[in-house]
Length: 212
Image (cartoon, rainbow, N blue to C red; front, top):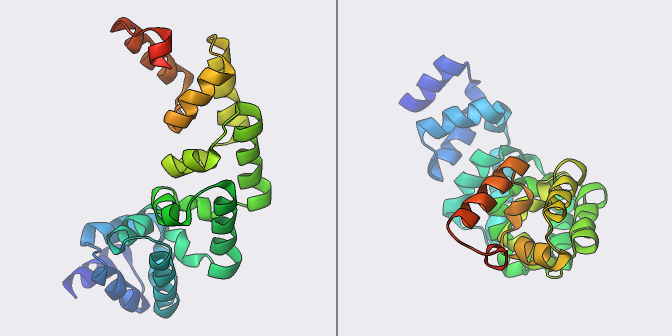
């Protein structure tokens, strides 16, 4: 009650937020967590408790540990607004078809919950196609499972420029595929960041083959 009253007073939170705040408190939300949630998506606090419980139960059913539910809600509270049958399940089915094991689905969503809002046809499918057909990744399911945020990277603004930069460094397609398979996040580093990492590895005596 003290936490609720302080937040109501400080952030002018609606009194009808109390049921949702009680539910979130029961899964581990602290006063600091509530402040973060209010700053990120205050309307999540007036979401239907019964609907929220149903969605959290669904997320647990696909392998998300209860201790990770708070982490997901703080990172991407919009997930409470997604419909199970028309939003989340189609994205999960696409990931499964791309090679993500259903046993790893909870891990993927925990690491990158925003994947659940990306359009299958307009975003997910084209990015997977780019990684497979242009970059040359053979085990895309493994890459997604290791670093699902790769599906949130813009093809035009991130993936294509990073691929071009790596090719301009003189790396072969095969070498790039090996790098991306081992460290998918390499396609998110800035060009400056990539060069700094490569320079460091060369400075400590690693060969080109070892760096790859």
